[in-house]
Image (cartoon, rainbow, N blue to C red; front, side):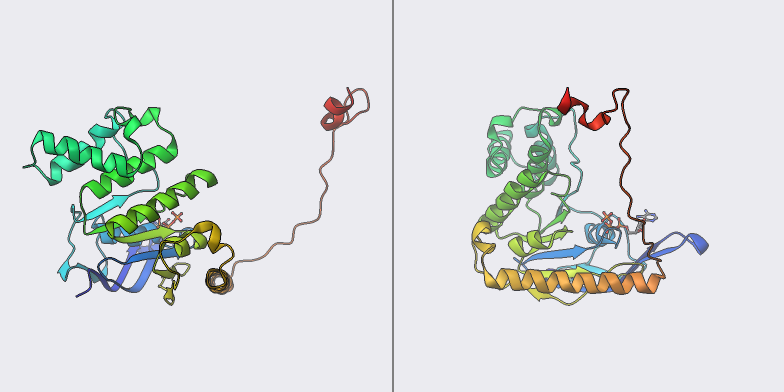
Length: 293
Ligand SMILES: Nc1ncnc2c1ncn2[C@@H]1O[C@H](COP(=O)(O)OP(=O)(O)OP(=O)(O)O)[C@@H](O)[C@H]1O
């Protein structure tokens, strides 16, 4: 039996003329231990999709099943990492993770909990920051704490909703490496939502595009036939990686262009314009003054 299954799931918001149909007839099956990446356009319904799986919202039609049982609300069997760090600002790294551990393993002794929290903090390389509060951490460090907290709850599936999109390119790259390393260790089932095709290919077993909304549906499944562990630098020269990236990007560009045509969106051709440079009192343009003075 599949670990997670979405059967003909549709979801919209609002009523009457304020109604937005977001997802239409979504069918998705994820097996235990798989790493799946859903790539999609801004506003296509990625967060809606992951919120349905997290049990934060309910589908209008269809059903979401975990291990064959219908999801009716949030639960510790699904660990969620959001785009924007959702840590409690008054608690330390240890405190934030401990709170989650307390709720899932209430019978664990204080000593065991302490060691358990440390294990997950070490997993994301944050032991030196164990007693720091979120305001003392960088964005990348906060996201690491979120990942550690989700993993410490030992969920059946880890739901990652664009966890790296608010980070700069360097931090994003190193966190991708960490997620990859942790996944190799833990072999947890993961659903990653991302807008970065390269990130999806680097991390996942399968890439599934979410087409543009309204009434967004899932596109074809692209299998990632790349050996693990993957070396990001080597991938840049890997023919399979480059071909897959090209195929997925071309697919996304085509469905994006189709959706634009269908929506009747108009293209405006802007005139070519050069910015006027204001002349200073000396007759030298302001932008050059520092160079000539
Ligand atoms: N609670 C809500 N009430 C009304 N409309 C909503 C609600 N949540 C989302 N929407 C709308 O549903 C559509 C899909 O939103 P969603 O956040 O799922 O997309 P997304 O792909 O995650 O977007 P982004 O890439 O910007 O994060 C958008 O048009 C959004 O405005």
